[in-house]
Length: 404
Image (cartoon, rainbow, N blue to C red; front, side, top):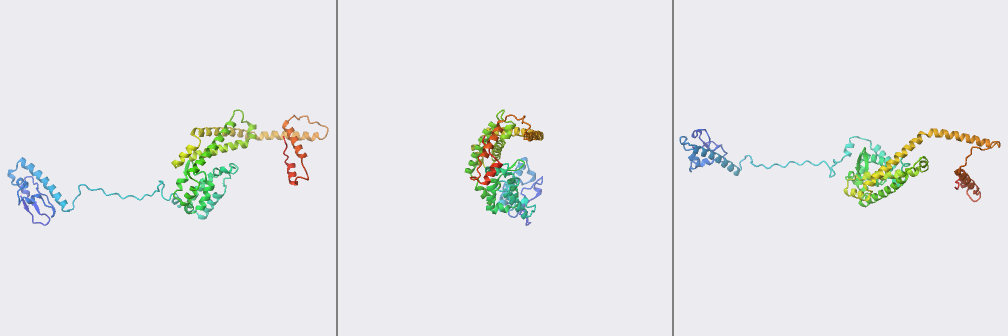
């Protein structure tokens, strides 16, 4: 039977002698939560009838005792929860995990990278300033002879422009707070090329890499816009079309020989230069990060098939010219020696002719020489000592321009 307990920690207990197996009707509870069996002494209930006497225990009563034990335990747990007792929460809510502070900018690059990485290598600021100033203002690779036209300036300076891009991260104060300096750098090196090669096939889109630097982004924004990108793309297409027409003419079968090469060397070099500039710009800026810029380039530039055809014909012309130049250079010494011997013999024969005893017997008719000497004679006859300046007259005598 259930009886009151005098201890302070437990209000009601159950005698172990009331059951055969030593089962308890009501478990221990705190002072604020009591078992339903505590009411059995005042009002008979299922617990009292179930635990009345061990001799009257039947299989049905045992089942009732087990059900009653589970009911009492659940009742005690509910009362303890409602009274505010401390106990395990059956459905605990998961605590929100602390979100780590992002260490990347919106573009996916680590913050302050790569200037913080380069800052680990302390280099004298004066040295960095001199290097940047030299690459900013001079042509350190001396490519002016290879790209003499003004519209090829950004292509001529693209190699040192890539180096300048890296060196600027050693002086991030220029990228952040020197708008005048950055405007000069952009106008000289990146006015048309904002996608540049960094190293061994890695390309850099300055519109993305400089977006977190105020001065650099402002300087690049002055030349980089949707309208300017369309203008650059149309210009590239015109350049590619003109180069394609010239290439078809030069690659005509039987036209490109040694004489044609030496007489039209400048035109051939100009055609190859235009083709390479057009291909370089097309391939680099097709990898722009901005979707709008890529779509404008694909829409305004030559198609992919035309670009591949231009690449193949340019490579074919370069291969043929390279083979011809290798042959000329290999035979240069022997041809020079043969021409020297022939010139020496002709000069000896000419000296003997002026003796009045020997005639020039080995002279063959040459129309070009006939016209040249006739033109020189005409130029000399047209000289006027009184009307022309002495400097002009001396220049004509030294460098006559014969009329064919």
